[in-house]
Length: 230
Image (cartoon, rainbow, N blue to C red):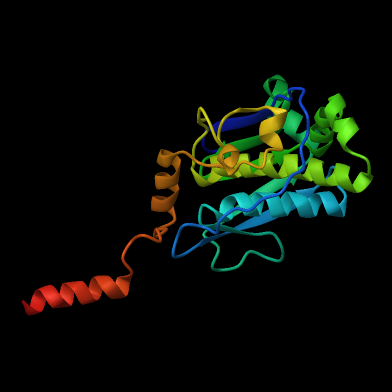
C-alpha cells in the first residue's frame, strides 16, 4: 500500500441522565453558497429504514449549518467537491481499528489522499440500551429507531468532520470533541454539534465558502468602479 495510514476514532461515553424530547430550530447556513459533498454509503449492519433516514437527516442538518450540503442518493455528481465512503459495518470497524477501537462508534481511516468512514450501528444501539433512562423514555420501536438514528447521525457528522477538515485532531468542545455524554448526544442545543472558530475558518477556506456578511461580488465590483472614477 502507498501512503501512511492514520486513524481518527470517535467514542461516545454514555452517562446516565434523563432523556428529553428532541426538537430543533436551527437557522439556515451562514454562507452565500454551499459546497456539495457526496456520500457513498455501504450498509452491512442491520439498520431500519426509519433509523437510516434519521441518520441522514441529522448529519445533513449539522453540516448544512456549515455550508456543506450532503448528497446521499444516486451516483456521485460532477458538482460534488468531495466523495466520502461511509461503511456501516461493526466487524469491519473492529478490523480496521483494532483493540484501540473496542469502544468506538465510528472510525475514519486516512490512507494517502483517501479517507473512509466506518460506523457500528449495533454498538450505538447497544450503548443507548445500557442506560435505564433510555429504556424508560422509549415506548415504541419507532422512537427507538429515531433516537438511535440521531446518535448515529451525530457520530457520522463527527467522522465527516475529520474528512472535511482533513485532520485526525479533536477539539475541546462541540462536534469534534472525542467523547460525548448521553445528554450531549441527544441535546437540542446546537452548540453541542458546532465547530470551533478555527475549524469553521478552515472549512470555509477549503471549500471557498462566502459568509453572508461579506459584500457580494456585484457590490464589490461597483465599489471598485466608483473608486476608479474618482
